[in-house]
Image (tube, rainbow, N blue to C red; front, top):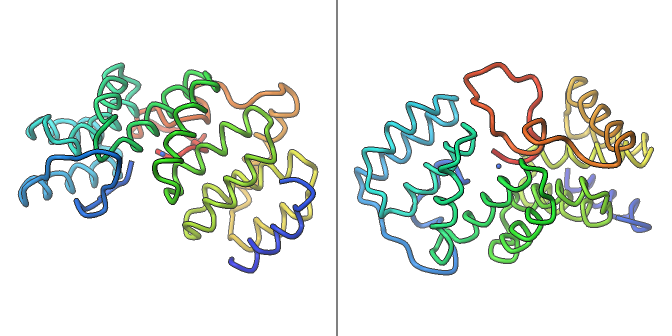
Length: 245
């Protein structure tokens, strides 16, 4: 994969979603945060597992037993509310600004703005998040998606490649880069990238569909379609988001 990414960099010189299960020590940002106790850490981990399993309501019920003065609790509540499409997400993300989770707050606000198809506002939040946490591959990927929606292809490719290099096991940025390459009619590079990254035929077909939509409409996906995961994961959804959950 490293060789592939390096090759893409040479080929393209002419042009160019919260942390599940994070421990306390991994949380970083601009301000300070209250430290959860050991029992609270276990509850937060359980809430993360429930989110990953699509049990959003159960996760929220579990989080409601924890104090809201913990930033880690508010972050997870915000994520659950965002995935459920609830208005409570935005004030919770805003409450994280100025804390050690400021980057996550900006990221979440960017995802909400992207879901509303407010690309300019999303860009403001996500660029700020990327400056705060430049090594967060989720933020870099989502920033690339907004650039792609705006047809700012040079910037989008840069962000997708950055996200790929930061976490090579995550195929989301790779899928987005394949979409960009197909949009540019770089079918050979798209096929090589898809094969080496192990993307399924369904994923490639999905990328082709999104690239065609970009060409036909001159803009990215509609809110709730492929911009941000605002659906309840317990409901069937064959259209997976291209931004991070």
